[in-house]
Image (cartoon, each protein chain N blue to C red):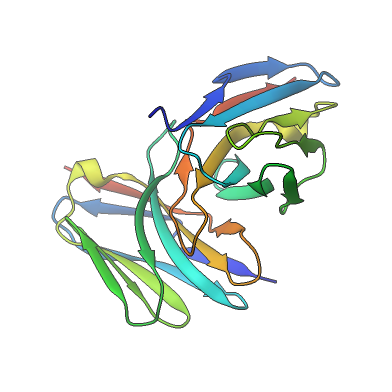
Length: 113
Length: 110
């Protein structure tokens, strides 16, 4: 099992450009999450999904969109990149059930200039 | 508003010097509390889950405990390889979000 795979690992975007951060998991997990991590700020939830076709907002959804057409994939879309979106983005997944642990990808470091 | 607060923000210890990290939470309807370890440039890795007040779990030099308002991560005789950021997170009864604290950066000096 590869676990949770995020691509790309690094990306530099210009202000106003768009991009999609990819996240795939091969553990057949129902729940998937997108977080951003800024220095000293912990992990902030952007969007999450409890299954294919179901998504919901987290704490900081503005400027982002998600879709979940399959159990395996949960892409995060940035439509008009802004410097405030410079961050490290982490995708995570976990099994359905009470208090199952989350597995994280290695992160995507995004810089918007 | 649901909150998870970790203290201290950063901690430097000598090798072998035991200490504790704190995670306090003010949430409505705690389902579970988690501890994760994060090394620089990597994603968090799961350490423990705690479900109910009074519960304790151990793994090597780490022991996690839970009360009704907070959790402690005790580190006994730490080694330099224990240096990392330790994150606390909670899940709630009302939805499937995972809410994280800001973490404690732990540095163990040889």
